[in-house]
Image 1: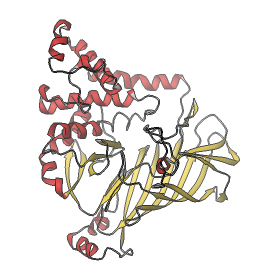
Image 2 (image 1 turned 135 degrees about the vertical axis):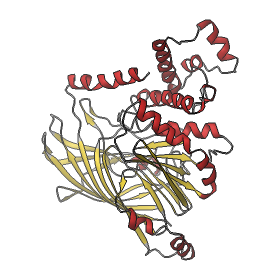
Image 3 (image 1 turned 180 degrees about the horizontal axis):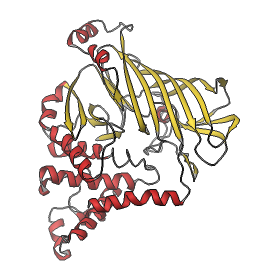
Image 4 (image 1 turned 90 degrees about the vertical axis):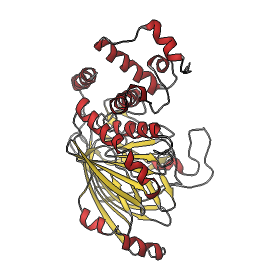
Length: 436
């Protein structure tokens, strides 16, 4: 199984090189301040865009992903949202220290014409001042009370590659972004605990303000907006940056193969999560040993109010707080494992999740099933999608299931352990699983 995956990954660079492959580079420098009462993030974002393509660019496109929640935005049901409940409001845009106004916004995409064309090898310096209004908790991010899950919240360039600009409106699809480096300062109400992409470089000063005494003061002075703490993160060679903040997070860590696994858990779930810590640490262990190294210092598993089962971002995964380790332990384990595995299949591949979903979901579900078997035995390899057995997933309409099943079958062929096809059908369908 490992040989299959390593062969696929090894062939990718050769294939890309043969096609004259290039990728752009971006460098972010951001100051973001969260207003805990209005749930608005005030952002001052610097961005360097390095043109490593052979082409001269006369314009640059950007994703404004959070505009999915603006009035008139198209949603996954094909309808229109009637009320403005979130989105990005741009105040000012600078290009090479000159203020510009000629940009246009089409829902979740922005077009910025350049006064001076960007030649191959040149760098463009930009700055954006904007407000990002979080929606109430939704599928991937949002707020609930004092809790804030923040994803896809900044101005990010559309990927430009040998196929041109990948101009995907954000409806209910996932993401495709350029590799880059992030220097991010997150200023939040004092007493909040933060988890994020990257490495926290001022842990002593940031976490000093999360003590019980400080939280008690904050709880008794909810209208005081002058007391804030800044959490400073550095992330290198990632293609997104997400974070979560909550004044009631409890925190613990484990070490796996030299990597720190952080857990941020709401108080009502803490004891149950601690009993299931093996799901996260075991996933990291299996992925590092069987897929390849994890080239970062940490990963954070966060208890959140997002509505999907889970959501992956580089170095951090969001888990739905209502998936209880106490009442649904197998499902909880599968979700944690699935989202951590995405830090390889999407996180390290940086695949195009909109056009080539199978490259992250198929491999991730396959890894999830393998890890469940590794940790809990063959009879407990409950995949997040709820399907059991290989043949049923092949006929499933769910792409995750089909791709995982194909990989599972290839593994069995190489091992010489593929099931007798005469027995596969009745053994599988005796469990009542059939999806056409």
